[in-house]
Image (cartoon, rainbow, N blue to C red; front, side):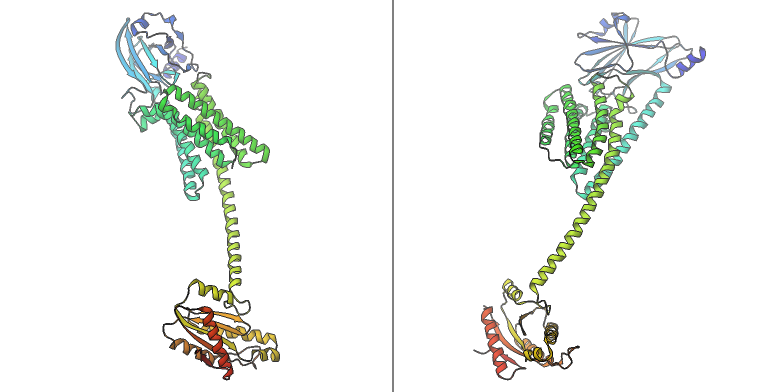
Length: 543
């Protein structure tokens, strides 16, 4: 028996410690409470001290006893960190000897080491102390208390904090991962997912006290504002995420988004309790509707993304409902109901991350296929464009593109050269059309190599070719025309060595404004005159 008693003392579970509670039917004073007998208070029921959203105050009668032979330092801890006010009274012989006030809306009451409210006391051997605490809150009235020895209290809280920070570390890592995917892919699905979990975490740190403890400190109004506001924002981005993740077109999703958007106004116009109840209702309804849509998509069309979504958000919904029912006083308070939303969130994040990776890979594969198809289309379009602009035999511009090119950038000055292979019909008749084709190809390549890059050169038809050469002075183009006449006989056809080529060129000089049709007609006239004069020469048009 002494061994068991030692164990209980070691773990701070002394039988004589007692907690009882009473609903404050009116504005009862501490003096009136001290006059009430112990049995006027209801027995404390571990795990069943959730009373939902209520405007009533609750009184706690806390008896702390030291049955050991040594002084004991004990801690009375309020494990739910978002109670608005906790008025703590230490009494002795029916008199208040000390008073402290804690609470989520009471400035400077959180310590630098913990996110919950707690009171420490030193108890002499065989001493009993009686405390009274009056608790009020606009949020959920959860009166989970624990009495521990100081030496056991901090290690227990350290273990709890390790669990919290492990969860937040996993969440932060997954959020950063999905944020980088959004930045890289510009895919809104990842953005909505990041925003959903960001606000989900904001709500959690508001509820469990880490927000006030580590982030916004004495800006106490943020805690009461961010809880309902963050719930609705998480719900809103969750609906948007579902819409894009499942590629939905259902119109009622617009209604869901609209309802969430309207609910965002609640924290500005309603009390904290009213706004929170509305946020719980809207967010729970949104999740249920999303799950219903996912089920419909899975059954109707076999949407594989819907399968992942259904399983992941089903786990999240269970966790959220457990937390909401606990806060509403409908379920007992235990590890599962207290941390169900976090466990559900981790499960959901891991599963959805896998689904997002699959969606990302599928998107990459689709983009790759589209890129290949686009390249093929561009190549085909370029091929068609090239074919529409060039002569299929010689590869130089055709007549249509020659006129299009001149029309796009009308020249102001230059020369038109109209060229005709001499006795081309005789080549076809004597050596065959293959020889004629070879002659046309060789001559076109020869001329193209001699012309400056600014020139526009085309096969005009049959054995006729036309070039426009823009020059400020005519000397160089005229020399070029004569050079073509002089060098054409040097062209050799590999398969037809006996074929010799000659060319006759008619030249028309032009100045702004240039009439292309008239210039070509003049060049053709000059070409005719050159043929009459004996061919194999250059003739400049003269009116």
